Structure formats: C-alpha cells, structure tokens
Image (cartoon, rainbow, N blue to C red; front, side):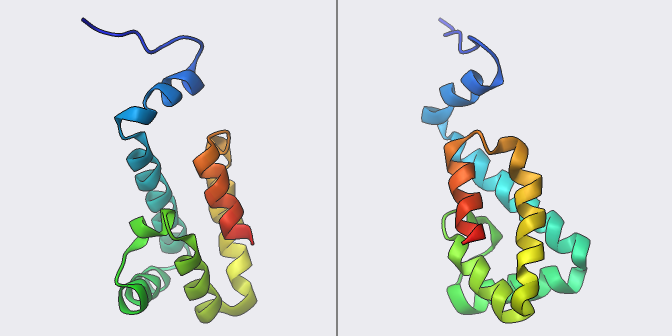
Length: 112
C-alpha cells in the first residue's frame, strides 16, 4: 500500500524523505552548486580546487557537504580574502534551500 507523503507543500515532502536518504540528495545538490560556481569562475579554478581536495584531504567536492572546512581552507589558500566572494555566490545559490536545517548549517559553516 502506498503511503501519502504530501500534506502541505514541498517542505513536508522533503521532510518525509529524510528517512529515505534525502541527505544524499542534499549532498549532491551542494556538490553541483559548488561545481557550477567554480566552473563559472573558470575551468582552471574548478580543476585547482578539485586537485587540492584530492591532494590534501583525499576527497572530492561531494565530501565538502560533510566537511565544508576543507573547501574553506583550500579557497583561502588559493584566493586569500577573495574566497569570500566565492562563498557569497555559493550561499546565494543555496538560499532557496536554506529552510532545510542541514543546508542552512552548511551555509553557516562556509560563512565563518
């Protein structure tokens, strides 16, 4: 029998998916936004960040959802104070999803 998960709009749908691995979807969402932002800056930027993540932390962009500090350390190292502009762009693109606590926490972690 099917269980109805739609009660009062998209927020409740998302909340009902929590137990079904929806955090993995958030991780992919964040990863795609990070990738898009870095590629918009330039393919060289994207490649440098990917290479540094792999070299320093043996991880990739998808891991930054769980470890945003890795991304921050690399962006600061590569771009100095300019990293803040990248963070602003990422957070702007995530804003529409910020009603979800894990996304809001990720955004806050990037901004510290």
